[in-house]
Image (tube, rainbow, N blue to C red; front, side):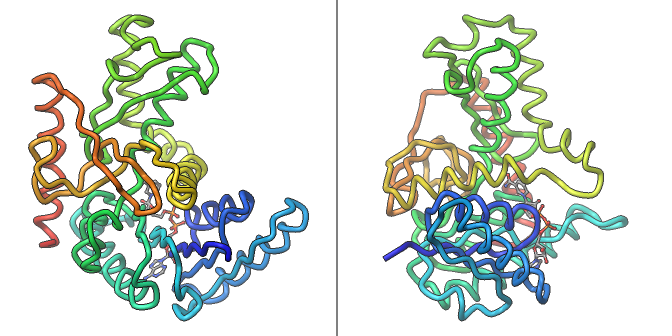
Length: 308
Ligand SMILES: NC(=O)c1ccc[n+]([C@@H]2O[C@H](COP(=O)([O-])OP(=O)(O)OC[C@H]3O[C@@H](n4cnc5c(N)ncnc54)[C@H](O)[C@@H]3O)[C@@H](O)[C@H]2O)c1
């Protein structure tokens, strides 16, 4: 039997994610949105691409949670973008309501699913899905680190003119300006970054990575990134469905690891068929630890506003 993945939200990130999963013949895909008829149209369009890509999967767009029944993975991308006059807290509360409601509806139909939350502000939204679902922590995670590391890998590869395959990058912490890229754990063909680049160039890459999301928004003006985000989601879905035991940076629930308790935070995690199977703890310098604590404090502040 084929696996089944539901993508909640048929906007830019949701639709490109659905398309990537269908193209990779990873699972049957259900795309659900509150907007009538758009998911149906996008779903049918993707289904009609399958004969050309040679992919034997079903793709369905819907507004009805009954179609999502018995999903193995649910990817939550539903949310609102910030509108003029809306404060960060207004957006936070609005997206909290959305993520809360879609979590309740999806878990009713798929009580054994693994949830991958993508909606922003990421760390607070994944904490919402965790608290609302009452799922065990291994079955609720957030996507951000794979994307942030992919951006850093791109910049390193561009700077050194080497294959992206050779480049590994390491980013910890919450998604946002307080993320903590770790150059000393970032490597090119196994060689640590500080052995290959000056401190100044590394700092520029780190800064560009931190502001990577904003850089795309400044070009698109009316939307945010979705090609790299959906590629990052696909890597997580692939690792789980194929039980790869792949270590990827993702938002995982911490209970004492890295000195953080009761909070979702971006850390290296082993992904397999049970979801987050292990949080990998690495040694941090005093500066890195302080940066991670600062990042945790900003997530804690958001979580406090919505009370999850
Ligand atoms: N974690 C990350 O790294 C990352 C990266 C990119 C985007 N994002 C976030 O992902 C979210 C989606 O981004 P996007 O570019 O696809 O936005 P988008 O506006 O294109 O799509 C969002 C979709 O959610 C739908 N939606 C709203 N309320 C809903 C509900 N109650 N039920 C079902 N669907 C609902 C909307 O109708 C819309 O189609 C945003 O919150 C964005 O900030 C996160």
